[in-house]
Image (cartoon, rainbow, N blue to C red; front, top):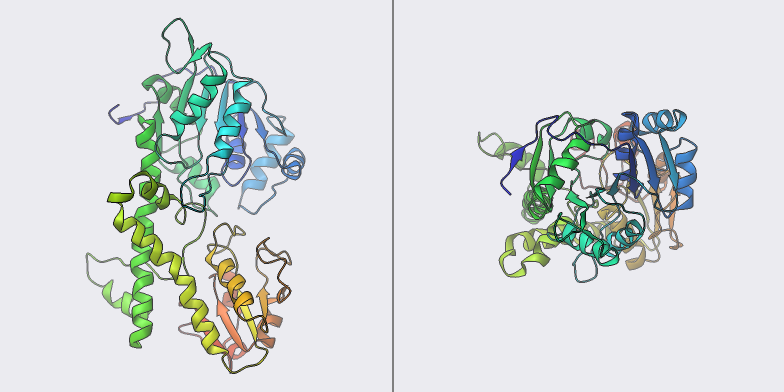
Length: 430
């Protein structure tokens, strides 16, 4: 299928009820946006706390403006949540797709969602996979459903009724999801052209950006390519930071100077790469064609190795101190959010605690409050505390996330302490 641009009104959808399976960082915003357009949306999640929170009009994580949308949709009766898959006109699957130990995609949640949908699906229904996935996953989801429903087909042929299958990957930035869901362009790929057009009709109810139609495998690959592109460019910056450190060069000054070239735009280095997109998606490309994805694999390896360089720098800074106190500022994978998925900051704190069990790691609270992620909660020498208190007690201060709240830290608070600034945050203040 050649790429086409969808024109509003091409397909008159008869969709009034949508089931969104998975109420996480993408599923719940999508459900709230659709419900805000007057559709009856039923959110489905295996976590009873999430179901309870949504039905009370609350959001179980931090995302600007999402709470207003959820509360409004629930109060108007357009959005409800439950633990089981209902009958609906359309199903949107937005479940996790983590990678396994060998870096291949774990599709167990997609397959389970497909099995649950199969019991409820009816002829003419639309099934959309939003989860970021390797090429071929939408077809695999369809195969699971159709194996359980031999009366149906992905195409109207052989006397069987058709079900429409499409892939519609999200392309949003955490912290700006409610804006970018609406304004960004959307890529929609169908197993058939009819499926792509039907999915576009649904998304056009709220998407103000252009909607581009293609086949499912191309849509799956497009999302992976976008994040792999970012990953490769971040790897260049991170590799520069390691080289510059070894040569005694300020990498941020170096990048600033290089970026004065009219055709150079180097990104900023950091402690690694996190989140469930850039840190994960490139591996899906590598697993799809290991022989010809050498650059993408190397970029992933560079970024995965960066936390080790930070840890070595911290351990060197506290060398000789018998029971050092280390203030670690920030745990999220990016600034001003509470999402710690695949966060290099969490990995750095975990490994510091294990590699120097005599050290006390004080995590400066920001966005997460007193709560520590599951990876850190069992560690006896990791404690969440008030940021100012962590800094005051510390021998070394490690800035891991550039939350805006950390800009309130005064230069005199850092005086006399070893400072490891992985973000170039304090170049002018410390």
